[in-house]
Image (tube, rainbow, N blue to C red; front, side, top):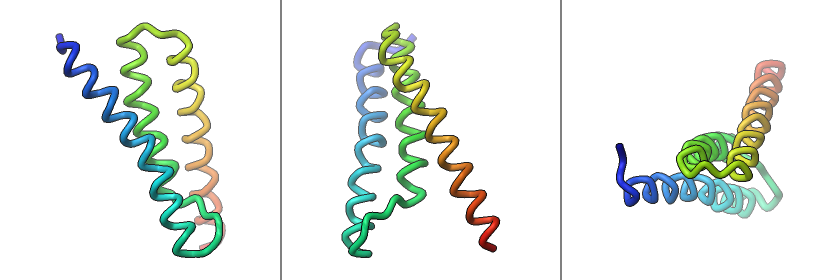
Length: 90
């Protein structure tokens, strides 16, 4: 059984992944001088969302669970769409 401190650390780790996606997206967009959503954005969304979903389940927060659970579906779909476009373009 994990301590409350360990669970808080897990929650903060999820938030860090989730926040990093916006920072990376901003940096890539600035470098290219156009709005760009790099693959890292979707992977960080997926990892951060999954960690936060685990934390939400631990907290037994149905609002948080539904929000993160549905977000994961969107992130997986976007990853699949980007990969399909990459394969089709090859």
